[in-house]
Image (cartoon, rainbow over all chains, first blue to last red; front, side, top):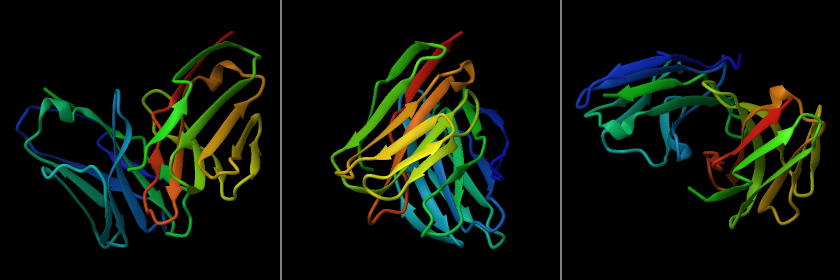
Length: 113
Length: 111
């Protein structure tokens, strides 16, 4: 158990809908990262938050957004969903910026039908 | 993100064999990490490397940070069936905040 909690574990929704994925980082970790894993794309970095502030953006679509709350949990919002958004979405946390070791949650498997 | 090239893409070996895989990039990294992902699970950190030339072991796993800082290697000795999974390398650039991942090496081990 990495200590990173993601909910829900599975999500099935229709095209055009909006969903919210939730992540609770390890106790004390300030950084949260979101990654998307598709079958043939590996782990693609989406966005990073550090202590409530957006710190870096990767290949995140405009239809996607995220935030980190004062209690350090984070939510990834995916809207106007398309079939191609079906993927595993992982959250990872790091204790501080000087420590590069990231610990991953078990992921949310999103299926868009 | 920066491109990390992992090879081989997949390996099919017999239990007891040693395994080698590597990760290369055109960019210089200041940290290399190796992760293993089991089906339906999140990646689990195996080994972290912080200095060029560093050699670090974790049980039967040994990883090295390449001298040029553009590559890293992972070796698994005396493989067992539970080594099955996808192995990912990840690198952190000097100025970057996010880990860049390779596409993974899929390992299958037959008893």
